[in-house]
Image 1 (cartoon, rainbow, N blue to C red):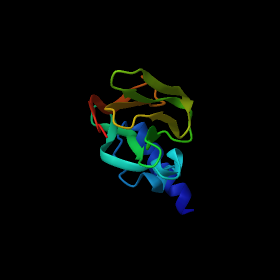
Image 2: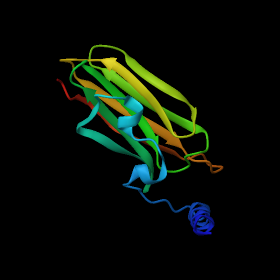
Image 3: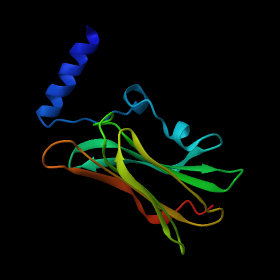
Image 4: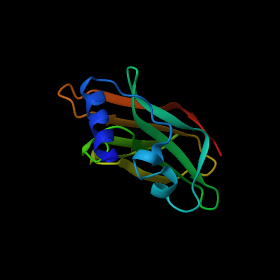
Length: 149
């Protein structure tokens, strides 16, 4: 019964157009950046950014790094509208190289986007949309190059 009450509250909040950030992403969406990127990947300094649409937060984009392989990994994990396929994007760009993107209608996350970038600077970006008629788009990340390790 508690589950039904929680669901009603969530639906009411969404219908009212009110969303709040959920700092405990694992409590709602069962996927974490560590789980999606895999063994050996850890969050880097300045590697978590919210996916925002105005004041609303729909999820987070994460930049991860694996020291042993030299690979970066980017994943966009939804905090809102998860379990519903909406346009979701994860992008990783290596300075002086190309942009790598995973885009589609996903229920929980976009990515992982993995690129070997040992000793190179990277930028990362994520996007997701809501399910409302206006299809508000939430974006976030870091367009400037950094994490040059």
